[in-house]
Image (cartoon, rainbow, N blue to C red; front, side, top):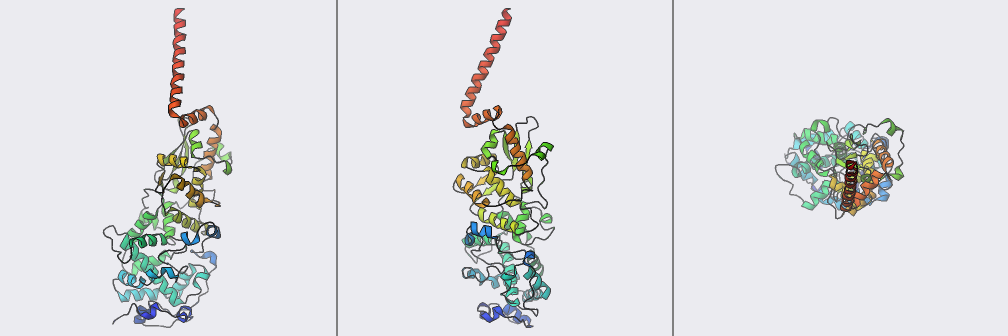
Length: 454
């Protein structure tokens, strides 16, 4: 039996096909030709939009940032939100080929996947993953074909590009590969991870290792080692962006021990000190270990109350950081049970970094790597991303309060003034200190000389 995978009728669907409200029982051959189909209610009632895992980007982010640049895919559409956009058709027309290659031309397995996705319960679940207005215009046939081809594309892409043994994705140019990698982490460009698991099962392949490499490449935390498979996949993620989020963050809120006096202190956000002001009161910056957003912490020195340390994960900033951060924040803002650690962490950095000198301190301390043009670009990035955000302070308030309390206790004290002068001009300070020591020793010598004569 011969199957025409790239039947022209598929590529030139009529408007009637896209909007049709009935699906006929069809043969396996027709399934492969259409790569779609089911005998279910064409328009199942959508669930309340609050249950959807993929929703539109919040208006505060749309209005503040360039929506088309940071939230709209540039090379490939995944799911219904941007399906059919003209600029994304180059890869769209290749998706049937990628699906066949993923299944090694196994027609029966591909047909089985189509039938499974066309079941009434599965269609209802897949539609419920999105807001009603993003799926209601597609018939079950069009929507199911979209889900099938998009899931196959993701797996084919990660297995080809992130295979540690060889690079096999020759169908598109290298610059498009970079764009696709970014597109797969856009909030409005997601499909259920459950669907990827189903495809891996029917295609008899395991792409978890390649998916983890994809996650690692997109990480904003420098030198981040992906969590073990058992930790990342213990509870199935909602989608790839959720998986990226999970790999940076704990399942529970950040917990930092506070002293009784710290608990009574109330944080004043408008007066939060920047990095160089913290150096003046004895606070140093150290990379946390292991590198994770859950390990942001403040600690005082055991030998001196003036000495303290803030431990931060190593952040690697490059030209894709803003896009990844904004989409992670969009996910947090649309997820009811999220404690928004990315939003809180970005706002913490924005409070502490106000000029290029602060960036230099963090770079020298090993908690920041920058691949942008200048240190001022880093300042601008965090100012832009954190602008108008209201973080969930429950996660990081304890750290902020301990930092600010330490600063207020020690600022404008003789110790902090000495530290400030030392940082401003170390050699001048050392010369002054040497003169003071010489003066002290001269006084001691005079004292003993006088008393020895008596």
